[in-house]
Length: 112
Image 1 (cartoon, helix red, strand yellow):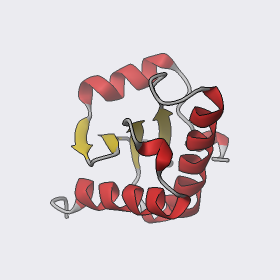
Image 2 (cartoon, one colour):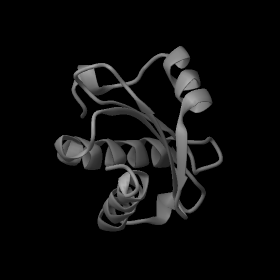
Image 3 (cartoon, one colour):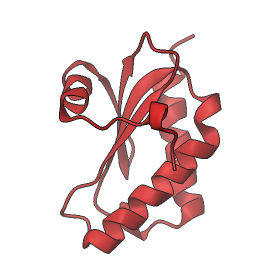
């Protein structure tokens, strides 16, 4: 589980990131990124009701949260919202981890 200071919780925070954020797409994920002045990255997850039942959605959220928790120190300090797409629920943990690292690399390959 992510530390409290790294979690996005409020609807207002999510909507700000959706409006102002840069969006990056892969086959199974979308990533919204907004620079922050905070000392910590804040991360949120958005999983549609179209993806399975609540058990499947929670499992997917726990997996994404764990992948991000392990790698959070290697990400630049920004606010992130990961949005899942249909088909994401069928990925293994390893495949999902590769998808997350791919989308992070895509987000920051042009920024140096």
